[in-house]
Length: 109
Image 1 (cartoon, rainbow, N blue to C red):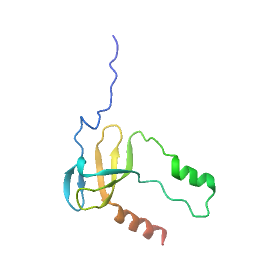
Image 2 (image 1 turned 90 degrees about the horizontal axis):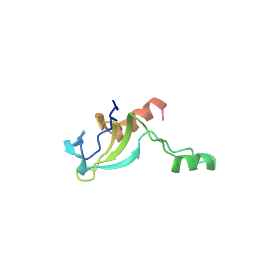
Image 3 (image 1 turned 180 degrees about the horizontal axis):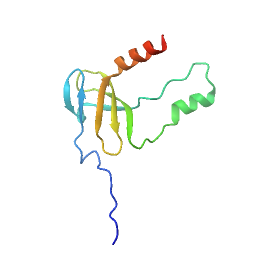
């Protein structure tokens, strides 16, 4: 007996909603995906290789991942969304400004 391949649901099959901290739950059509939230800009004196990696090289994560989203049709807030790239399940949404403040506090800058 052949085993059926399990496939991940697509975005059109799973209606994604993001719970904006400012506006509440909203449909995905109000947001714009802006990339990987874990990428950090290198030091201005970094090597050309580091800048190339920062600019062009991205991982293709399988599972939970932190992403940047912009609430374009709402409050214009930048958000960090923890999303499972296989199932599109959302486990957390926070304002990117709050993440940046917490990170600066941790590093003492």
